[in-house]
Length: 156
Image (cartoon, rainbow, N blue to C red; front, side, top):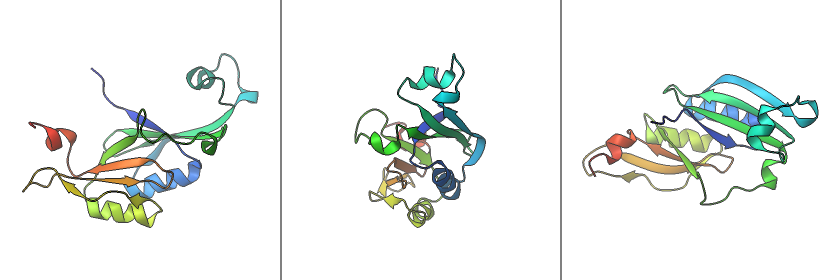
């Protein structure tokens, strides 16, 4: 049985991303930031083993949510974030977060440079089961739920 512990996201600027995810969703720094530079790395090296030979320089940090699931942010400096654009619909293409107040969260997302990309949808007439798509300032799609996935889709 697998349990999601964290999601890794590549961002162009680590400090901006830490600030954004902290202000908008209340994530806090659990560990880091850490730096990797190939020229200073000892062998064998975990970063090279996990990320491969193309990554020469990067930084990362572990952020934690109040619900116990984290986001690991990566700032790839060589190659850069811009040199490898995000694919539109391949692999993992969004994360979903449960929030207490959808409208208030959307307002914070927009206030801090993100955007709302869909309307708010109700999945069950007469019940407060809402979802909406948004984006962070770095281009990642973030789906927001008003309830857990099991409440939103259980029994359908």
